[in-house]
Image (tube, rainbow, N blue to C red; front, top):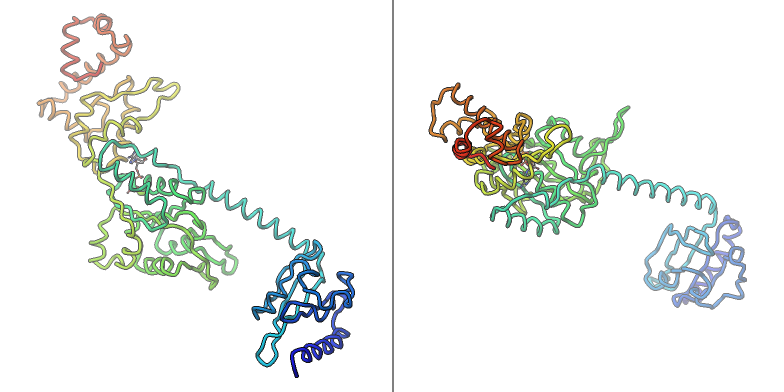
Length: 457
Ligand SMILES: Nc1ncnc2c1ncn2[C@@H]1O[C@H](COP(=O)(O)OP(=O)(O)OP(=O)(O)O)[C@@H](O)[C@H]1O
Ligand SMILES: [Mg+2]
């Protein structure tokens, strides 16, 4: 039996079959391997008689057809949505073989429930649109606040680090930010996210130390809502195409480390209580102030996870190693003037800077921010002076003026004197003659005091 004969037989059987098939909503068309129509059972849908189309290339008769392609590739296509005359139909395309040789293709379409299909389409479109709206809502909710412009520095090392971070922001490689507490790890992580191509996607932060170990898994992976419990979306899912920021990484339990490593290696995860795989698309930035090498040695941290995350290491220097940044940091961290409070911009006295320079700043920039915030509340005048600083910093003041062991009484008198002079200068817009007059002292004495106390005028 040759090909043509085979096709003929097939046609006959199909014609017999079509008597029992649901011909109302169902149609069939067969093409030979050149894509020419050999059977046409679509009359009722297209108002074209079989005799008119037999032998014609199917591409000339049917809109959006792929039958001629299936007749060439031999790859079947099932349940495809196809638009014909503005309506969606479900199409199947099956290659026909005879003696192991491709001889054509059969196409079937189902017109049934097209109305339902139409409304299904509208529903799907609606769901898709609201999904997109939620996605951008999530991105808005979990927006990273800081950008590279918020990293203030004039320090050479920090400046080149900032430039380096701008470059790596463009990639999606994992970053491990290390540095003492308060050195700006979160600030840098946010700036990297905002400086990169996925800035409009969410920045999801999770503090591994602040979530109890037994809750961290659900927090990260989400859960399927077993029993009455509602399903929960995890941070891995929320981060989607954005950034997952794993803060305080060193506190993560070994068990969680193993689970996280698996996600990073397979780029897949499942919600707790589910087997369904979800693709993990986010970039990972981790941060820690712990000595991870020691933790690895002590078997508290997995070496393989360390290597996975440490693709791009970023090491933030402590404040004591970038003391030339003090003035510019003070400038941005000093609370801004507020109505009814400090209406003038606050300045920092030279002697205050001298104290700052002597301190080690174990809490780094965050400690500096707190010190300045406190000082701005305590200080009633326009200038922040040593007496506005917390006690633990005052000790540097005593030793600096060579008056170590100076009695409390003398110290307090000096503080008061300094404040009086500063206020007088402020009230007289820095005019020393007027300030001296207001204070009722000689101008020369005022000059001497200004010099002794290092008051800025
Ligand atoms: N170079 C900088 N310029 C401006 N502000 C900075 C800079 N570095 C740090 N800060 C500020 O210092 C504070 C602490 O920064 P951040 O929270 O990023 O520190 P961290 O390293 O994450 O600290 P921790 O280890 O305690 O979590 C923030 O208010 C941040 O804005
Ligand atoms: Mg932090």
